[in-house]
Length: 257
Image (tube, rainbow, N blue to C red; front, top):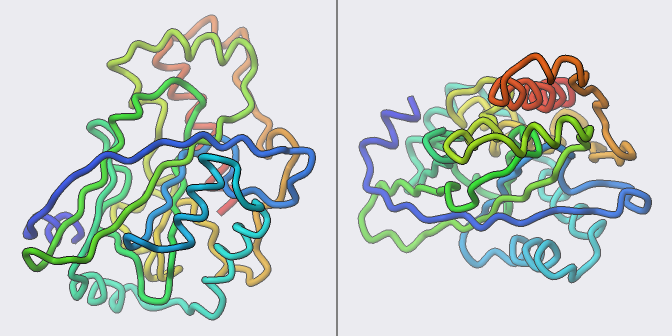
């Protein structure tokens, strides 16, 4: 459905800046994103909350806990809607968006819902090297010359890796870097399911609709402390290792959300 809806529209593509997230795990009570994720934060252009998040991640300005609380507060009172209503809502939008990493579509046909300032979607990340220029945001316009525009960025939060895992990921050739970033861990083909569930982006979004007091607690160093044994890493190819380590991060997101 999203593919049909987006293919019928005019579009323009642009890059997404990639920022590193390195919180103080000893002091943080909540985390903006979870370890082992590449998270998209996106909003309508000029949104102050997105600018505040960007400045914190880029320069360390502001207080992280306050930013997290502002991000979560915007979901207060948001109710779930039926999938059928989500489909109709999507069709009415003047602006839809898709996110790709290289040749891989991470999310398609999503939009920033009314009353939501900033939305976020997390994708599994195994901690390997990436090509930052391969992250692309495509905006699909229903009307030509529409002034509305989205802006956003990607936040990388590296997982805790063993030395053997880190070493083998360094051997992955550039033309296989797509193996280091995964698609929607819940298997949604479009953003519609997410809209029905959270009236926002899908995937690993912090979804307070499921728990009004939801936060991302700080699980010390790794919330899902499972690693590939060194003996296994010695027996499989570099690409297979990258895929298996990514699967661990994907399974955590499924378990978490």
